[in-house]
Image (cartoon, rainbow, N blue to C red; front, side, top):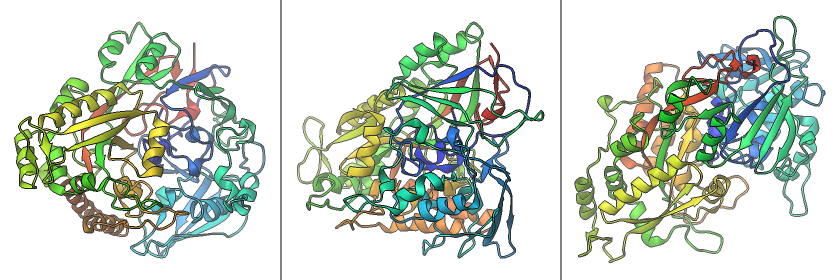
Length: 590
């Protein structure tokens, strides 16, 4: 299930991934069919937190229980009012006045006010003591200055930016508004260690009735590692033409099923209402489409990236130990080594054998559907499968082969490292196996390590103690600035060379490469000009540097398919918003 903000930030790392898609759950109005019905959807990972800004998982229920001031239309991508009634951009293009709807309420019946809006931004999202990736995409200009947010009166809030910032309303407006009456005390008090109580607020051990939101649904029950049940929020602001409270569907069951094979079994037995159709599932599910009473929708190229990433961090931990073994670090930081790896990966085999031809090789972080995508024809460097070229690059960089065909560095060390990946997704495991074979063909040994998704995310984002990982970011969307928390040298998703984050001490030995800073600067420049062609030029230059330096070695961009039961009425599936962007008006008719 695609949710407007779920997809910007967290899609495998925490991330960020992207703010935009988590709140694509909005649109029109019919009459109710079956108010007692429930929708059952699968997720491969348990919730990691019920505290939205602290969440680091790509999988969460926040798109159901929260809304921001504005949302993106799931068909057009245009901005529309959500909690906001309207907004106006002043002549200086640096001041935005947002007016709230009247009569808004939280899921506990308390009134939503402009004080909640100011609290959410000033005391949560812009608070240096709270580690959240959203601050990254709100930084403005090369100085990294943050916007100011202030209350004008009981319905109006003023947002001001120190410099022009084209994507501001799209991202600032999409952030969920949080309840001051439930969270403010935790932001102003500390525990015995001097840490904000907010940092442990609303963990997964919190009674669900204490979790307060403003979206279509609210938490009803939570059984760890099994399911989350959401119930209709009686105070949600939307009404249909007859005045009925939306949404129509009474309950959402978020069924936790880590293994995709088990998801398939549950869907085929009728226990799930929808499933993301993995390539190996497609032939079977397509044959059973009529008998199973569901429809498989083609969403086109996924607005996401998949890659392998080497740890380029030269820093040391608090005990003076380097995050990465110095021998391996020299390999990983060698551009020729990374380019050799890129040439060694057989993307055609991955596309044809694993994705069943339903995809294409990928070389850019920006989706092919974005107007800012730089194509190979326009100058994007690509790495077609060429193991001989990979070997020549390695030999030219000082590596050598022994009599067994094993790759050694100039010091005689065998080139061997561990590749992390998340467990449970068959497609991931198959790709990792293919990569293992490809690397063996050029004499490199990798040790595959599969971890549960939440463990995998914590290891990458907290320890910095890893060699390489297989991952992805979702929610690319139309506007590339959604990925700024990946490309900012100080971003929380700058995983290949992550520096100290808010609340952490300075990392000794951490260095920023010139090309990293160039990418950061280009993203900043692109966010500050209104001329569309100039913005394309900046993002094109950034893509060229990324393709040359390869901080992420991209793999394959698959086509997305979703199967949805025909009993769910009102589906308006499209490649931007998916099948549930208009969840509030969907009905279930058995």
